[in-house]
Amino acid sequence: MRGGIGRTSCYKHGRGALEECLARHCEPATPCERVCDAQAHDALEQCVATGEPREACAERGRGQRAACLEQDCEPEPRCEDRCAFNARGLFGDCVDEGSHRRKCGRRARFAFRDCSLENCKPDVSCEDACEARGQELLVRCIESGVDADECATRVRDEVQACIGEECRPEPPTCEARCEGAGEAVDACLAQECRPEPPTCEERCAAQAKEFTSRCTDNGTQADNCDDRARVSFETCVDENCEEPDPPACEEKCAARGAEVLDHCNEKESDAQGCAERAAGVVDSCLGEHCSPEPPSCQDRCSDAADEFLAHCVRDGIAPDACGNRKVALEAECGQLECGPQPPTCEERCAVEGIEFADDCAEEGVAVDACDVRAAEIVAECVTEACTDDTPGGDGGDGSTEPDTEPGTVQ
Image 1 (cartoon, rainbow, N blue to C red):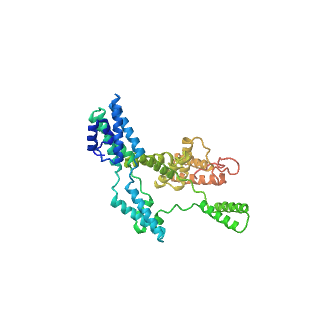
Image 2: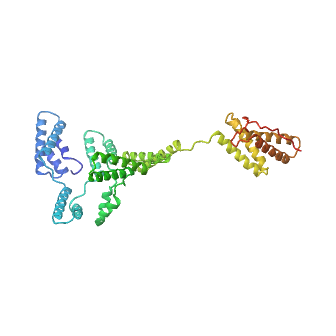
Image 3: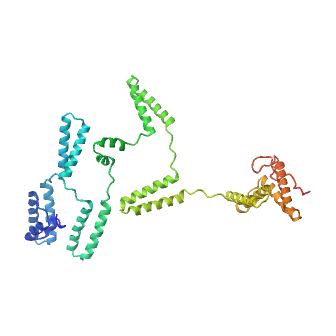
């Protein structure tokens, strides 16, 4: 085809115009094709003579030509097919001469490659095929009476869609990459294209199969051998094949992103856009499913109490007094923020100490002396009332109330 018009597009013209159209736009026809062209033209003329519209008759002529080509015209073998035929002959001769089949196969591959490079014109690229399809669409569009600018817009969109959907290059296979390794092709195949290593279960199954073979070779009945092989397999799996850990949340999100990326690349040609879309899916998945659990109310109170203790000690207050106030603060936070929680025995003792220190200071006693005595009171309370080491110890009497009364400063 030359000029973007196929042979069948010429059949709507009369005989003189038809021959001019074929000469101008089409490659020379083979003898068989010329016979089919003549039959198509006769079908067209007979149809027109009956009074039918020329466009309908042209369609009938195209159908006649297609049927003739399919039935009567055997296509010429492709150049690559001829090269492949010659390479197979070379391989057979090489093997007949006594050479190793692998060496002969390598010679045949090189012969096919050299023949293709020297004799075969490269196939039309996918993009060129889309452009040619666009040209045919343009001709039909203009012939149908649509505005030329509108036709050009339609064709441009059609060509872009064709390239985007059909012309994405497939990544080369491992074997194809090794073809360029020359004499090292066998080593490349062995090193780069090895199959995945067998799983633990597959190794156990192979071991059991070998056991069955040895067992039957020794004359044992097959059923007995099968039973023993099954036990051998199950034992091997139990002792050697641990269940893999389930994928982590982050791994699941990464796998989901990879699925989105593959699906997007299959449908669209914007690789950067697909990568950004997949990254967004991963981020969203991580945020929704892989974030740590928020701290509990009690944990927040404990953190706040720890922060208070650090500030208290930095301010120069006695560590024991700061510790007592920290315990009391944590208990008060739990009561106010986290709902009613029964205080532990130690917390009750700490509250008693804080109340004593406040009353002591109101009586005009030095604050440091009040804090020291309060710490002693708390220690005495815990020792006497909280003999249980567990939180909320009851001192053995079933009560969380301290058993002693706070003392006074001497």
